[in-house]
Length: 250
Image 1 (tube, one colour):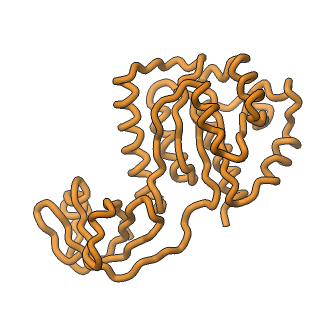
Image 2 (cartoon, rainbow, N blue to C red):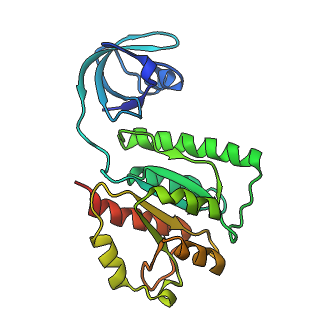
């Protein structure tokens, strides 16, 4: 069954309107007909509105509500991914897969070793692009919400913002120098409970520098290791999210 997102204002009692680019997709790409059932979500209340297509107009699709499902599809824990800005279009892949894996928010971080440097205008353009990818991924994976891609933050600001999470993980290639090992990583993850909000920091291609690592640890982030091998930036975050999803999924 196909899923689409709509603004809360488009849910009008037992009548639901689909507008925007989804109109063309439903009519001309999927070639759906009146009577076929679709799933509609607002992306903010977790509800799934099951409805049947009633009428295909030029600029909107009119649907009739059949029933509402309120089963929880989201992780009980909110996971915040703080991703160091990577090169090229890697961020697009990271956003897409992070949304599929259940992330709650994605925060791009302009850390010191990030090769990519974005001015304010470029940053806004990129974030808008990444948000569109997040919405498409949420639609495809039938998420109950659309995870938000926040504005690009400095490392210091990102650490401050991460304080909203109860547990803050700092995968770091030099974590061993700070006493971390795989046994410790397993122990930390095993102790996590569903409903406990988490922050995960992932460095860019060059990793975090020593000053950033020191600031993170001083602020309470927990340095962990992901093993003996060095993972690419586009791999590390997805590896951590996969582990967390496996552990926290109900």
